[in-house]
Image (cartoon, rainbow, N blue to C red; front, side):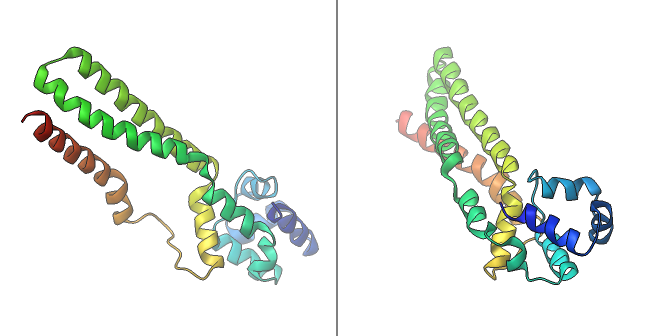
Length: 182
């Protein structure tokens, strides 16, 4: 990406060391180093501060990165894991109820294995999101496109992420119960 070279170029233009830039942005020198070595990406707030400090527009600062960031956000790399998690969760819900109704240990084990696949997939998705800094990238893209930027996850994000999925599984189990109990 271009941002690493842009930060370094503009930092040297104003004769700042990484330490001096870090002090101005209220971050650590290691953070500046990580940005310049592409180990992480600055959030929107830091991009705005650098833009003001370097006297350049944010578009100039991230020059060429917008499309790369979009590509990373839209990458289908974790679609496989998301689909696997969804399918495995639905299957686990449908297998669990017959296992209960028939007291079948084999079906319980099968449901548990399928659920473990779903759990592993969800963990893999979170690892990939952290690896690609997806939350930060989404914020930058939203900013560049003039959309509202959310700084932190909200209560609704928590509800959607952590409560809706179990509720869906409960509904699937209930449906399975009514299907297999009749």
